[in-house]
Image (tube, rainbow, N blue to C red; front, side, top):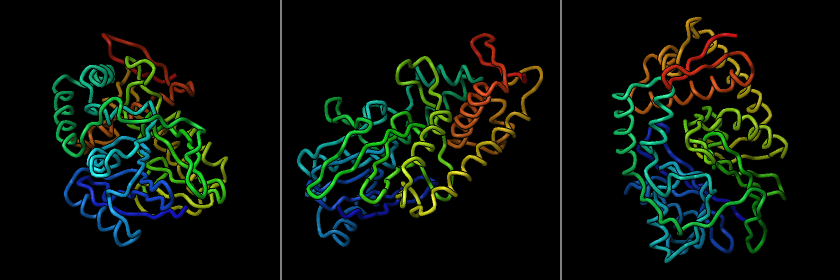
Length: 318
């Protein structure tokens, strides 16, 4: 089970995305990159130079999550590989339709105190991002199930559901040497954004992304990983240090947001603007996601009270 990292360019500020070829039978690709000519060209070259194979040789695709930089080329590869199997967690939805759902995301943003004008602007931004992927048919994917085993001729990868960055984010562990392919769950140089998402069980509710993410980090820690391959940047060999750094940064960011809460009450949109005053475009949505996630955690920790006024959530210090 040779794991081969292939970096692909993306049109996004995060830079290159790492996809991983498992050179074993069946030949399997973990994530696929954004749908751009540059990314497809880099994938072809990486397969040829690093593994001596072609896109048409791929028999199986496993998606850690369905953001465009990770799944955008999936449909292209499936067509060229004459029906390669695609595996993805049931809580992922971005591969079936637009990533921004006006009804569910619009409701969550309105509840966070975002104006209708800004919601419309965010929707336009996501519409432009949709160009970097092709949706897959409802029946085109098989389900990634937590704790299931993905079998190869000479070994296996165990599926670990690691929600947080998205509801259906998954990691894959090779238990023989405790190597993990973590997608965007664990990144060495940046902390993954807990993206604002509807709850998969009840789309009128907000998915508790940061709380789930903390559980996912602890679960990865319990596996005592020796090596973690990430969706962006270099591999991680000292997860314990990164784990503690993540916890410290999350607590520090939470303290900053708590300090911005007005006694008269603040919305998530107010806090996002106060903490990230220069965030524009897609970064504004990421700032809103971060604010909602941290405020949810602060409420759970009984540091904030929350009440609804005209269908908008207001937070106050306890």
